[in-house]
Length: 316
Image (cartoon, rainbow, N blue to C red; front, side):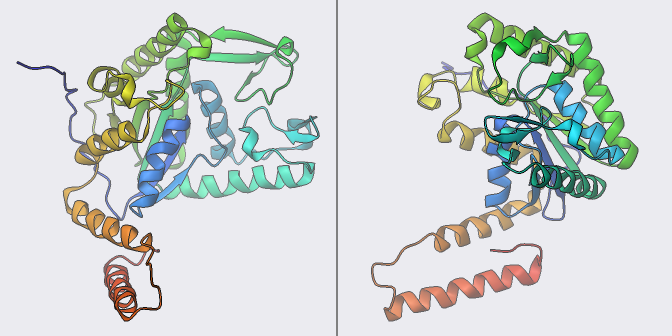
């Protein structure tokens, strides 16, 4: 008897290897996957403007990045003793306005360069629910704890999301026509919106994504992270304490399926070498001065040097 389902995943026609340059943007799950890329020493950049959940706010970021449209004083505001931008995450907020503007504009310049050089971009959408500033009527990426009465909450239609996704693709392809896209929907459950509302939100993302383009085309891939969480890992033991976010076991499992299908076969052995070195680097000796431990460190350095000779971009 079969007691679980398994999501079929097609292998990518353009797999990631150690020469690939990856840009990951989107929800907090984008950061979970990016941490794996970082651990295994791939060339990866993640959320230069912080975590962003909804498709329209992600599109806005790429409008700025692709056009080198820099932030000005009118684009930031002061609240709770810090300067913020409604377009980015609060992690970038700053007590000094000029420093915030410099940080944001540096991120635009660097991300434009990264986007031009990237071989793959991974976009993780989190929600269709958005908050609109009542004064400006602009959709915000983050409310920065500004009173709720200054915003209206709305559900983006699948049609509007589809248009936003297509705009994002068009923007990126104007400066990098050869980039490979990987789209996914975050498995994080946004229960603060409501149980039914969370499902409705995710369904709009699915509908928009699958109506935007044919994933059989070579430059577009869809990775079913949400579906894996819901159908393969359908048990609360795979959730963190908040019962909303995948725990480390779930993240590791989803990464395993991702790497099996989206990472080039010849890079798997390198990943194993990197993993062995990473574990050795985290090893803590009971007697650091012992001859045995000194030999261990010498052998470890040899492994790092040998790998560095093969792939100079890998740094520990």
